[in-house]
Structures are given as structure tokens and as C-alpha cells.
Length: 388
Image 1 (spheres, rainbow, N blue to C red):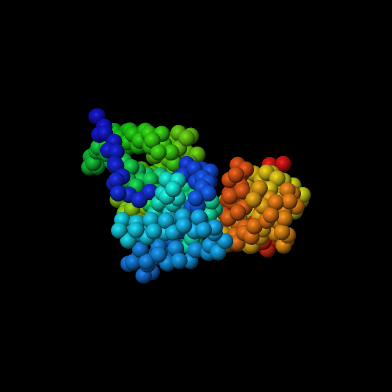
Image 2: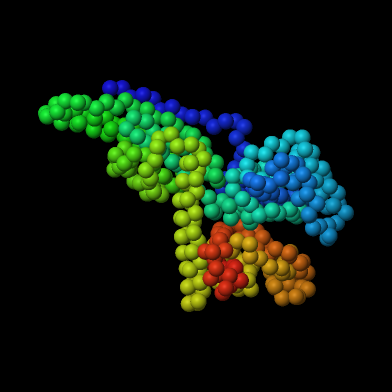
């Protein structure tokens, strides 16, 4: 019997953009002496900001702390503020839980992302985008593909950063029940099993096609026991190694229910990964291995380009002084002990450390306050895995 074609589903054009690793890499490299405005806005579900989002933009712009700007930079900031306020009042439509905006009008930079995840409110105007928090978000979220399957149909739904995107619908015929018994019943049962087998192979082909079209990190399988088990049994290695779990569920779960199911898996997996990383860093640092704990030791390693993976605990930072050539100290010195250049006050050393990590090809991981509790106690909320 000929199978029915896979129905590929198109995402709506008006769907808000979410950041991907390519955006992160581009923004981490971006520099502009004209200045870059970075905004992170959180629109809590019950907050009044959702009714007046433009007011949230205006309020955030007023919180900018820019006492040391030169007159030319201050003029550029006014241009950025005017452009953002005009956009917020006349063109912006809130479609997410939070907004991230990077703007440098003179350099043609305008990146707007809307997420269904919370962010820590931030407003900054500097020579480069404030990307430490964005790196943390990208580290936390992976792309999941959820397949909901029964004996006749299957749905593929991509979930990324709290947004569900239907990707495909697969449909195959499955014979109904036969009331006859004996030999005829056994043969008919075998016939039904063959149909189910063809169906799960058809779904597997669609999954592999989706992996090529839009690569995903994790696969979550839902549906009645028999269909779910049949699919799991035939999955090839590229799909089997991505399985994050399976669950008993209906074929036509809502997008919100699918997202909630993925959120539970994400939180569990991310907490385990963060706790393991923190323990590895502390164990290696304590044994004198290739790891650091604490601000002084970690920033020194960053300045020397020895950091392979920077580990920050969410919400933990401190003030310090930074050399314009990339060195950093925390003591109240006025000149850099490495190159004698003047040191500038840095209000957020976590952001500075993340930027330095990007400059030296290191990755950045962020641990939650719970998973990173031991790193806060022993290292002030920062550590690193070293290259050498």
C-alpha cells in the first residue's frame, strides 16, 4: 500500500527571531568606537510592562550609567536612544517574555530578539555589545525535536528557547480490529504489526530528514506505549544518541503542553550538567590541575590566554579595574602591572571576563545559583577550565 507523503509545515513569517550560535559569534566580534547600545528587557507575564512595552524601553534607557562618555560618544548615545524610542513607540510588537536588542546606528547594527525565557534587565552603552548574558542563554537552551506518534500518525515539533514550531505531519493507514479468531486472527495481527513497522520506518525517515534540514540536539518521543516502543526500537544511531527521554502522551498535545514537557527535561539536564562542571572545576583546582577558582586567579589566566572554558555563577560579579590592552587586576592600582597602561574602572567584571573569553577563543558556561553554590563559597562565583 502506498504511503501518504510527509506534510512539511512552514513557520509563520511573523515569528519573532531567536538568537543562534552564529549570532553570538558575530556579536562577540563586533566593535564600534561609535558605541553599541545593549538592552535586555524582561516582560513578566503579570507585569504592567506588557500593556505598555514602549514605556519599558524608555525606562531602561534612562537607567544608563554613562558619566565618563566623551561629548562625541554622548551625541551618538542620543542618536541610539532616539532610534530605539521611535521603534518602541511606532513599530514594536511584543511577542515574547523578554527582548534583547543590540544597536549601533552608525555601523548598521540592529539585532532584535524576542524570547519566551526570562532575562536579567540590563542597559549598557560601550564599544562592544554586552553578550555575556546572551552566551549564558545559548548555553542553557538546546534545540529539541519532539515526535508524537501513534499507530497511524506522527507530529514533529521543534522546541527552542520556549518556542514551539510544528515541522511535519506524517500519516499512514493502519487496519482496524478484526473480530475473527484462530488462524485468521493471528494472520491479521501480523498484518497490523507490518503496517506499524512501515509507519515507524516512515517516521524515522522524516526524523533523519529533519536532522539534515534543521539540526537538533535532543529528541523526545511521546505517544502510546506500543507505537512509542516500536519507534524507539528502529531508530538509527544518529537519532538514538540524541534521545533525551520518552513519555506517555496523546498525539495532539497543544504547543504549550509540548513546551512544558521540554522545559522539564531541559531543567533536569542543565542542572546535572552545571553541577558536574562545577564539581570538576573545584576538584581540579583543589588538586593543582588545569583549573582555577576565584577572581584573581581566573582573570590572570584569562589575561594570559590560558582559559579553555570560563565558568560564571548566575548573578555573581564584582567591580575591578581593567587594562585597555586586555589585562585585569582587582586591587586598587592605577596602572597595569603588565604593560603600565592606565586602568579603567569596570563595574561588571563578569561581563568583562566573558568578553575576554570570547576574544581568546574560550567558551563561557553559566551555572545557576543552586548548581554553582560550591563555586560561590570557594571561588566567589567564578572559575575556569584551562588549556595548559
